[in-house]
Length: 209
Image 1 (cartoon, one colour):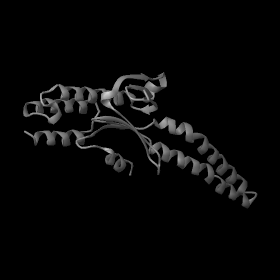
Image 2 (cartoon, one colour; image 1 turned 90 degrees about the vertical axis):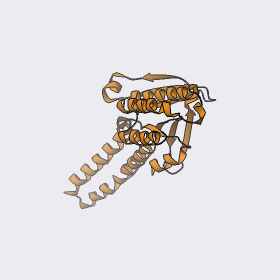
Image 3 (spheres, one colour; image 1 turned 180 degrees about the vertical axis):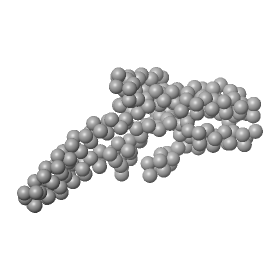
Image 4 (cartoon, rainbow, N blue to C red; image 1 turned 60 degrees about the vertical axis):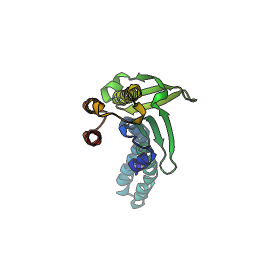
């Protein structure tokens, strides 16, 4: 469902280059206490049931923190950070969706912070400085921040190259297609796009020759 919603946001000829979420450790950080409480309640109820059968009602009480935990998981799953060929998009919300996007053209600079554990477990913070009214987009503890940053900067550079080419706004010329395929292959090797996305775009470009 989340992927279908994201697809509906894309413009003509706009493609998804990279998707990430907050790191799994962030989910455990918010969910860990709730799961611990539920486990303690269940364990206590099972032990007490040997002496007081009604103590099994404590298992039902464990459903309350588990319900909060499920809510945290759904919030985590539906919070996405996306790089497309034109924009950086934030999506959050389970039923009511909130979308914030910044055009790659307005991205001026990117600051990344990774602690020792962040480098160890591959998460970090990104600050994206833009020319928009908000000025700064902050992404906290996202997974694979280096790949996200690389995908974004490569996409921005690619946009600039398209604008510099003769007829840049009207699509690639035949002579440019091998170069574009080589650039896509480089993005694939860096992990910014998947093998399937590379093959799809490659077929589209070859069809224009």
